[in-house]
Amino acid sequence: MNADIIIIGAGIAGMTAGIYAARAGKSVLIIEGKVLGGQIVESQRVENWPGELAISGEDLSKKVDEQVKKLGVTVVYEVAEDILNDEEGEYEFVIKTDETDYRCDALIIATGTGPRKLSEKKMAEVGNRPVFYCATCDGALYKGKPVVVVGSGNTAKYEVSYLENIASKVYNIHHNEPIPADAEAVFVAIGRIPNTSFLNDLIKLDSDGYVVADENCHTSQPGIFVAGDCRTKSVRQLVTAAADGAVAATEAVRYLG
Ligand SMILES: Cc1cc2nc3c(=O)[nH]c(=O)nc-3n(C[C@H](O)[C@H](O)[C@H](O)COP(=O)(O)OP(=O)(O)OC[C@H]3O[C@@H](n4cnc5c(N)ncnc54)[C@H](O)[C@@H]3O)c2cc1C
Image (cartoon, rainbow, N blue to C red):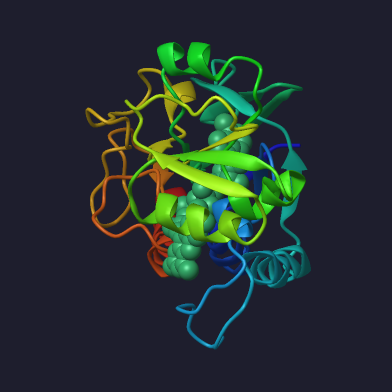
């Protein structure tokens, strides 16, 4: 399927972009590599989404999904692997996924961030122990067992307090400290990195890999817009992701004329 606008990523930024682009009368395709809703699905309780006193990330994502589908937006579950200019000239861009090719005239990158991985040296120390990046998702597997959380920021602290209600013992170490011998699983919380490696040299990224963008969500390449946590910005939250989605889609519609 080809579309006027393709959005890569079905987090809150991508889905909001889908809502705005569809309501503007454009055909819209969202390509999502993992789970609809993106990273907020990991959160059990969101208290700063306007209009909801408290809601789980999963329930919030389901509501937005319903809204997106009702507007006729198509979502496919594939991983975008490359973006090329359409040599055949019928469309502007070709998006190559792990399954097929899609074509569009305007593209919105909304691929968010993923957890930063342990170094190779640290992984060698981890050995055969399983490694997880979300205590809420996987902590229950270690009921009554000793685990370790690697990391020292707020997320790591949250992971520790969550696991303390489940595991027999929770060690909390810095990345450069040794992993306790009896820990049966390793939970990693050492920050996040943007999911932008597949963009290669297509658009300008900053030194940390975030897509360089102005406040109108324009990238260095005409016709390619960016929304949400994967772009240069100072506040990475749901409402700013949603705001970016609205801006990027509106700019994409304007670009298409
Ligand atoms: C545990 C946790 C709790 C949080 N709590 C809050 C909170 O209470 N309030 C708040 O405001 N914010 C919270 N945040 C932050 C908030 O979740 C993010 O700011 C927001 O979800 C970012 O949305 P996004 O759409 O930009 O990116 P993401 O949610 O990261 O979505 C990006 C999507 O793109 C997909 N993708 C990536 N690469 C590809 C590819 N190559 N091909 C296809 N698809 C791809 C991913 O699978 C993902 O679904 C929390 C984050 C976490 C991790």
